[in-house]
Amino acid sequence: MMKNIISLLLLCCGLQLAIAQEKCTSENFHSVDVNVVDKCLVEKKKEETPVVVTTISSRRYLRKRIYFEKVISLANSIEANKIKFIKTTNDLATCRLYNIFPITRKITKKAISFDVVDEIPTFLSCSDPLKDKVDCFNYQMQNHIINTLVYPEEALDKGIEGEVLVSFVIDETGKVTGIKTEGVNVHEILKNEAKRIILLLPNFTPGKQQGKNTSVAYSFPMNFSLNNSEY
Image 1: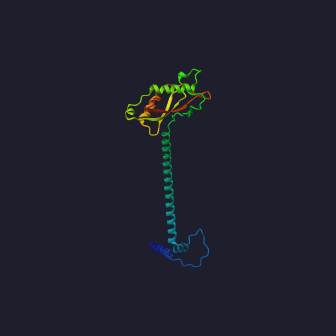
Image 2: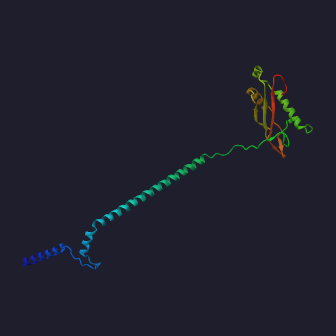
Image 3: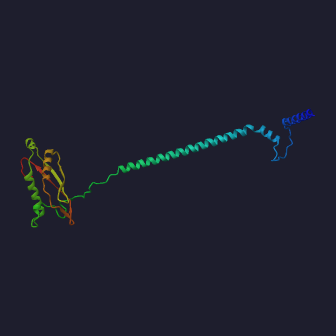
């Protein structure tokens, strides 16, 4: 009895294996039930595009992977550049702040010529209202030059002569500023002596323009001559 049962089981298994290994040869196939896995369809699909499907799938995965890697790399690069740009901007801003200095240079008004100013500056000795201020100024200036001039010894020895054009400004407080000594082919010895004389001038009563103290420009030629005592 037992032998018969075993023989029957072996027979059934053999039939199942034969059916499973049977190759589908059906050509008349018209309808597909989505709930049934048909061996013919599966084998037919495998025979038609086994490599193509696998290859396309692999390429898409690879492209997506490369694409996302590029996106991540680009994002990191942009972020890095952004941080670098901000740092650079801050450095420039700091540099600019360090280079800003307060403007302390005094803005000076242009001096008015002695010939056109409303009220000329005057020596303190010319304060008498009965005196003509211009005549008094010129007299006191000439007197100051005669009393302070010392003809340079080197110029005496070498016979150096010349005419120095002297100019200076009497500012709003009455002080002498902006002394200049010029002349064509004039020796520096004479220029230095002319400057020394002007530096010895006293403070003035400042000139006025429209009732307000103003800076006044004054100029005159100073002659250095060994044969003439007039300057």
